Length: 113
Length: 113
Image 1 (cartoon, rainbow over the protein chains, first blue to last red):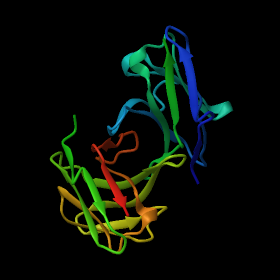
Image 2: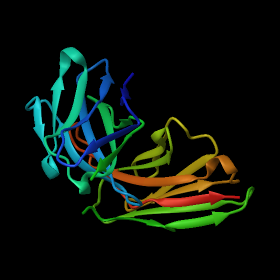
Image 3: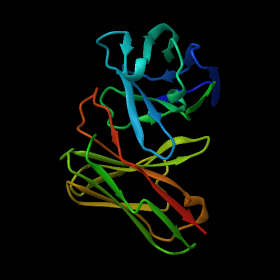
Image 4: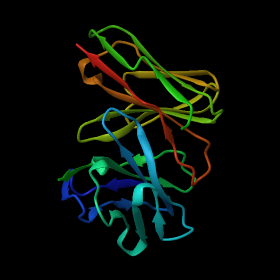
């Protein structure tokens, strides 16, 4: 069975500081991993996805994530936070052969001016 | 942006009344999904469809039914709405291959009084 844990339901960082949002997954088969962003009153938008081609994945808006199999992690980072990054972020996992995504409970990112 | 619309976008109804939410896509994607989003729970799958007239349950399907009579439309019905079904409902679509992401609609905010 697949599951996702996002540590920290709320994260605050200063503008210009490093953003680190944590995601750990549980999967019995090779997973596909996704990060989505949700801005207020909007649907979810894909930030990036891991599909086994490369362990370091670059996404939109300067975000990237690194797949670490030994740690079963897929943490999201951005070197320098911008005010426009304030949103809720969701990590999701899909197992090979499974048409369903399982989402984490989300992390709300606040940027401090 | 993927062509996904949801209607209505907002609805207030009373306990015990039937409610139908509609998801319409213009992408001709095979898979369609209904999620509900609640604070502290992330997104949870209600039902999904893998083709016309082919549907299956998700993790929180009790009290909900779905129908898909055309590729482009996926309906979610609350037969007798309860206050616990107050939530934001999202439709998503996917052309299922293992590394394909899901594309999300704008959401429907449902309030059951």
